[in-house]
Length: 121
Image (spheres, rainbow, N blue to C red):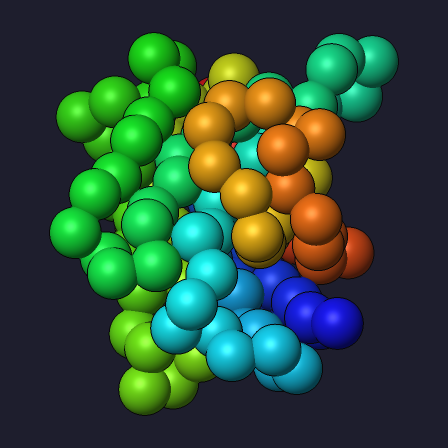
């Protein structure tokens, strides 16, 4: 089992930045691919970014390319999502996911509870 706890969400103005963190416990974090997804009210859960267990490969959704960066620190069992140039359409609950790869939610075995990000215009 893997437990995931997200943090770092909040309310910001458009153009500002936030860094989300996801702390993992349980199974060996360093062997897990990790991902971030988001879900806005009334919408499907959307892929944001993923990172291989080695940290050597990353993958981004089209809507965040060039603005968001995923990274990980295996010594701290933590994955990060640096979000720059935030837009109101980035407003959503952001979820950390583990144990999968790619943009499909059903590829991932473990999920956190989510952290709210609100971007005001």
